[in-house]
Amino acid sequence: MEAHTTHAIQYLDAQIDKVRRAQARMVESLRQEIGSVRQELDNVDTKFDDKPTSLQYWYCGTPLVPISGLVTLFATRP
Image (cartoon, rainbow, N blue to C red; front, side, top):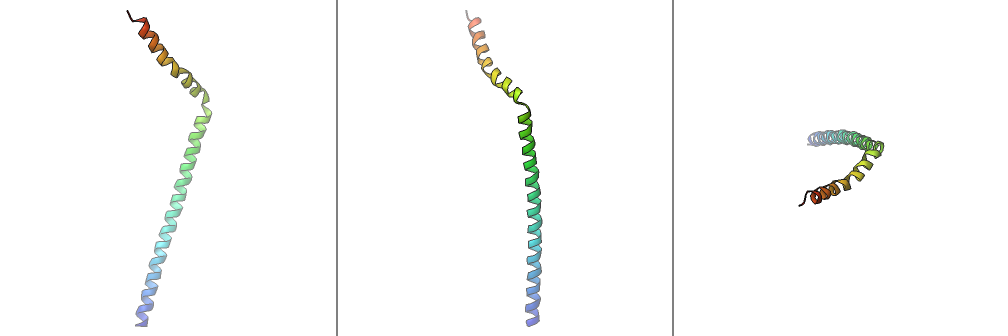
């Protein structure tokens, strides 16, 4: 009986070790993915930092659209 108990305990220990190794692999994989996502976000931030002039044109161009629409509306009105 004692041999069966020892064997069962060893089997359970082996299964626990398998689960722990799988968890460790998953944690490492997630760390790598998080690192790559952080790097991609840094690249996006750099792209926005490199192009402030295009944003300035966008901000200046935004009010021109409704103003030109109103001018066209009033100019073509009878």
